[in-house]
Length: 447
Image (cartoon, rainbow, N blue to C red):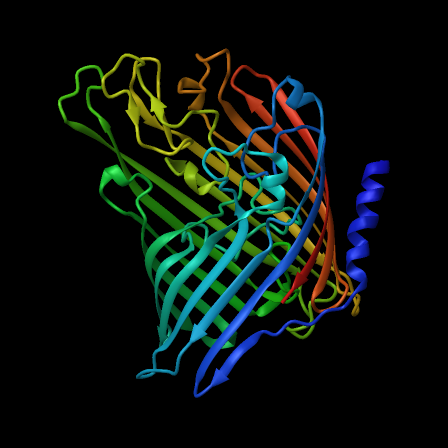
């Protein structure tokens, strides 16, 4: 507890000074250039050595040194910087270019040692979003790297202090071309339909992925909801979303005696999301004394790449049969694998998460959140790979769960602090169970 108390004192001491940041860099002749982002310091204590700042859907370490001893981390790597450029309207089209970067990259110089100090103190600038957008009469055309369509991201993100995502939460960005239609109805209600052509999850399959969905929002019933550590404290409407994805993968038809023939395998996913104000805002604008519940359910196969950090314990590249001429398959870990006979199959997945957020009455600018996320696969234990169960006695993991509870407070309009406790649990294919306790105190300067 002494370490945790010290971390709390150090992080809170960062919030004693007030700062202002320019947001609009240029607003002239109908051109507007803006800048935004935040500075973040995360102080983290874990009971195991399983994770960096991002827990994601990774496994808790087993009964080894990493699984029995803890670690403490200080990180500024989730700090972000964003720019948007909006030119004058052209024939009623509103266009925009957007660029967003963070420091979560790590690219040491060739031939140098990957040190812990370099990892935390010399992070690399990394692209998060970069896209162009054109809007007119409820239509939006978007091209570039943006949130995945699956799960109607980012409307239903779990409200965590720690760096997103955590277990059971769809989260990711990729290159795409997307068309969205928004229809405004009576009583501030809106309906959206979207279809996106997405970057192929396996480029060797040649075909892009398809994602689409529908979402309805009821604007007359709202509650305060900040879906993440730096989201604004403002009201969000009652809403429901449905979305789905279809993607194709290919594998050699006969790995032992390759002929050039391919086997085509279809992956898919279906998702349902909801955000439900239980104690609604009294005037539709004030988030104080409001309570919201939300959740997400996904099911399908071959979409593990949309769950950050998930590998299931499988390796990359995938190995079908060690002596096969075409034993390796160019596919990211966690999407599919081979059984002991060399037959390829996609990983079946189901995820579920549920959460709540309560904003205190008055003008104290404080809210509490809690939630649960779960990921499960019913067929990954039949697969083997570079780190599969036939290699050095390792086993895939088929179930991951995380519980969290947190407190957040806006000290000023720019300065925010938050504290979170999270408990993570991983079940391996040999029935071994590992768990991790995480305590995190974070400070943010948001502009």
